[in-house]
Length: 67
Image (cartoon, rainbow, N blue to C red; front, side):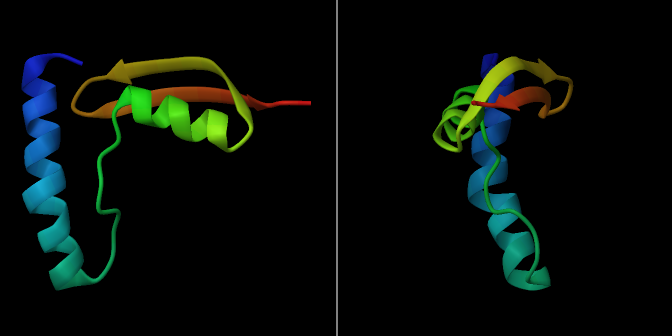
């Protein structure tokens, strides 16, 4: 993740999402990085096959259940 996206993720995580959650009462309150998603998938018992960053804080993830 480049520096611009890291700064954008910090701003979104610490200002935009908590405000949206407070006023709307819905929504996720954290934007995850690729490393965090990989750790969450392995902790849930999935094998990460493909994990790639896409434009504007989107990602594509493919995971298979471990036998």
